[in-house]
Image (tube, rainbow, N blue to C red; front, side, top):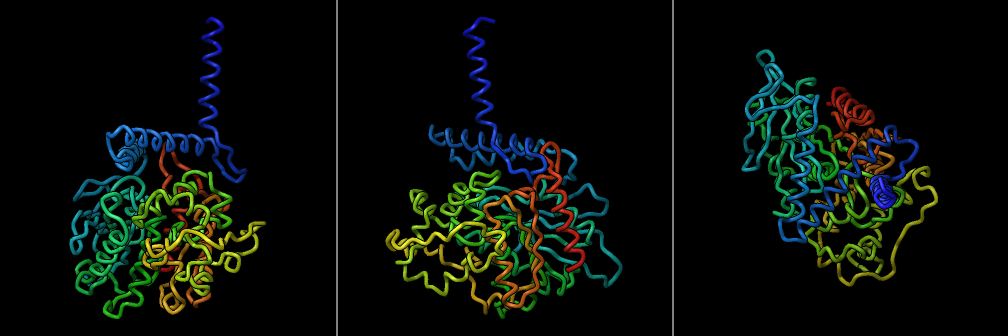
Length: 419
């Protein structure tokens, strides 16, 4: 090999290594696997943006295609076909609840008069990606249904860019009310006193919001008995919490991407991105964001000291003029459950909240756990010091993580003991 080809090869190798490598905290147990997965995800996002710029497709559609390709590479997970499953006696049906597509997992029926648990699940994906029918979501719901003798309903709510808030929330609420009706619970032989709502990330947001609404809706006679929230996203007014700053470049969810997901979900202009990152949308000049409302997400008061570290609150005096009026979703508890008042929280079901140290959403979950506890709700906070956002979904080869397997097992065990 001549000198020039050798130099080009070395430079190309260094460029690829520079692109792939991201320093990881010491607590991450399988750092190189996470580094490679992060590079794969970033590449998919860059390719999707390029295709969108060239006019081929909306970038979200391209990211969905990449995600579907990733799901198809996973092995070692139980899978299903519509109408049938791999587990003996398991019935799986793709139907609609009040017009909302759902997948229902029914374990083998017990003896006459035997009632089963029920669980409604909302998948994550930034309100733009994902499906409960594929990959680990499907596998975990199968495990819950089989191991806990539970009728699981996974909701296929509509996604961005086809829709934005409040449509995904209303889809989930409609399906929940249908499932909780005495007639439907009786049809599936579900004990009305043992019904849970659960979700991860954006799905955790939807689960928390639906649980709140159901808890205060007197027209719904059957309530959820527990809520299980996996690293939920719960507020969009402070993107400078300690976890947002500490983990702003951490896989699988960076600070910038989470802000983009929020703007998309709320139907806001993406040009607001840098202003929202700086908390200019929640400045003190906004009279709609009252001091009492601010206290509901005051991490300086709600977080234990070990999570606050040396960070200081970022509160702007002046910001974007009337942005909260133009994008009312920022203050809507249906989009931001952390903003709910104590009179709502006190009626909520007992909670399981899983948080990860290396996740921008860590403090959302911790603050919500504290506020629920202050309102008298029993809360289990399952915190993973070596966890990162998305680990709950990474339990299958080639992208399986031990922390993810532990998290899934803990989630199932908690439901076993509390539902």
